[in-house]
Image (cartoon, rainbow, N blue to C red; front, top):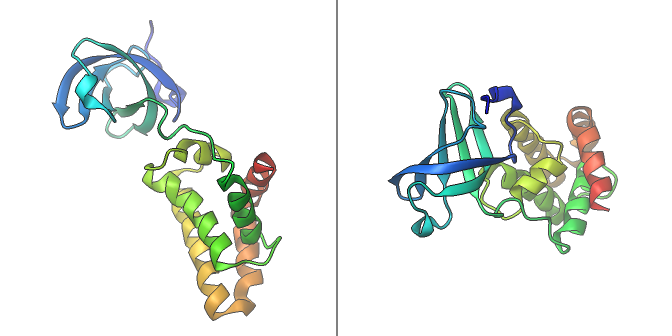
Length: 186
């Protein structure tokens, strides 16, 4: 199989691979013909005790580092799980509050912030799903969105008169993605 250029790799894509060797802890060097030629591929396993050298695995792309020519994989569904039925309305209300569609509260702004932090930390069962829901923001966009949310949270308490300007700023940068996410969560 011909190697795939890095621009064809995508976060969340499944890759067939086999274990080359352990790297310590939960880390394993793996080989995949689906990764670009010359790149290193590493698996961070949630359950490393059951992984053996030479074993074939199906892992999904968590991180692509073109500068380091490296791909990071995870196995299993953790991170890819759907948004729970309990969180869907909370996320929807948080996004609506950010966009000025409903009155912002500490709780709904915290829920909106929690969605973005999930993406940033990649430690929750639905982080990839939330990332896709928010139109797959880049690392820089995630940081910018968190900054704008934090500005709204502060303004809600300290300077409510500045909220319309902050909402307009957030809408200009992220309005389409957030509106789309609200519709998907409905």
